[in-house]
Length: 251
Ligand code: C5P
Image (cartoon, rainbow, N blue to C red; front, side):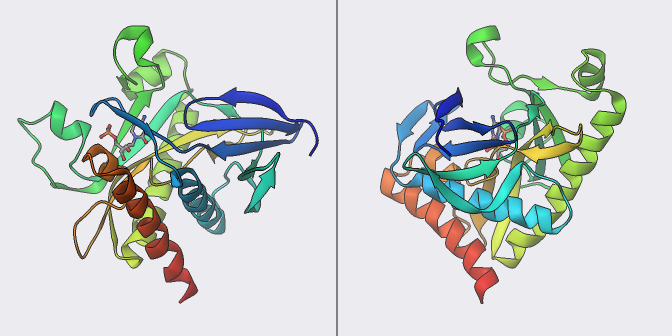
């Protein structure tokens, strides 16, 4: 690992090229909520997201779901801590599943949706990854007809993505439930590996999940940030998520 070419860098992540079959993903201490107009660096959140992400991707692998993860453990490269991943071609869609009503579904459909309403089976939503500066809307929502008709995916590929979203939803919900955490909703990203398989890519962490400690009904993920909690409280929430989730397995 000598080359340190950065092939992608955003506000919350950085990806290094290692070799033709290997990249290295680093999580930065950055949080942003466009809806709540808050953007900050909160020291320590990057490593907590990384720990959660590696734990969750390993868990999915144990269930036979292919992910971007190439090495089961957290690694150091160029004095940065991150995870070793495969090169992938990302699908420009955020795949979202909701178990309870919160967030955008409440803001957009108040005439038919009540706060905390349960969805069984979970609802699926597909958002196009498109920056707010392009069309004035952040990640506009697609439907299945748009996804296929606009050539983002073939029908078969979309069916496979939906199958994966359903599997991830089942596994995450079960795992968090066992840890005393109520899963409200989450987002995953999917992409193609070198052989053309659709796999789970990118981050699954406190930043992509809405989830509460069942005992206190307080957020252990990014809602703590959206609820304008202090930086220390946000970091504590992120740590608590990992303590509850990862400690559970060691008992
Ligand atoms: O915005 P919305 O309420 O539809 O988000 C649903 C879930 O997807 C939330 O857990 C949110 O954190 C996650 N999400 C995300 N990144 C986005 C959009 C949503 O992680 N760009």
